[in-house]
Length: 195
Image 1 (cartoon, rainbow, N blue to C red):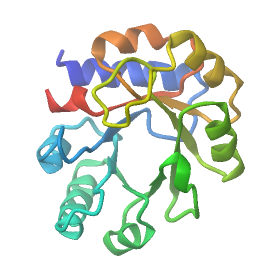
Image 2 (cartoon, rainbow, N blue to C red):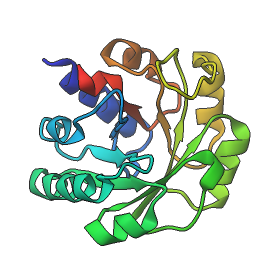
Image 3 (cartoon, helix red, strand yellow):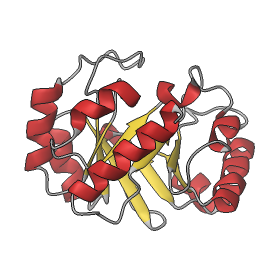
């Protein structure tokens, strides 16, 4: 079994153990540096995976978003556009993902929000997010420079949340096994999909 399929299987277990909330169990977060060809990765993703396209203002964002939307429709994936509701509407994305500092309006049928602690989780819940992406759980190569929450603290936050919590940050097929029974409803990753 490939590492991506192992990650997907673990994500499904977490989602099932969390009561099967009506959200994707597995999320692929794009990154311009670490995943320079998100379309190639999207073509290999397991069905029902959510793609979070983070374009960070790239000049070719509309073209890439359009290609990702086509791939998502053809392969049974979901597409969320990060912090860009206009682009999400233009390409017919399934929704929007908001960074913790920009939580705003819902566009489409699915809205996720990032959080880095209890305050961010509370903000996501208040905004009516369908899921909250808590990060970073483990050490990561992310440019955010945030120290990892650690498994114990992240678990406390996930268990206390009223919104389903997705684990992000250093998540791969090996670290995902440590997340079982800790209150998470799914997994998100960047590098684990690029391998």
